[in-house]
Image (tube, rainbow, N blue to C red):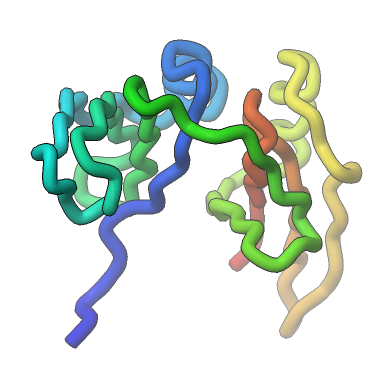
Length: 144
């Protein structure tokens, strides 16, 4: 039986830049780091002997993002646009979408659009999509 969410994993190329983005720009906490080496026969990833650095960012008692950096073998190139099958995004609840948008935009974060607001059940709900430094999609939502 599924009892809740634990983390979302994102394979990354530049671990230092991604950790800095999620902790310094987005404001998540650095929770833990793990050096992972799979046995020669492989582990749950199905990549025999893989060497990885895993960094978890997020909230101690909440959802976490696992930044997975493959050292050997290196991760393959690839990218999924937001409207392609197989693409994913991480959604963050925020208190003030306009302020967050302005701050992140000043820091060079790329957004798909400006924040869009609409009335849902008498509440103003705002949403905007952005990308992290490696093109992974992020959603920020206010009012839900």
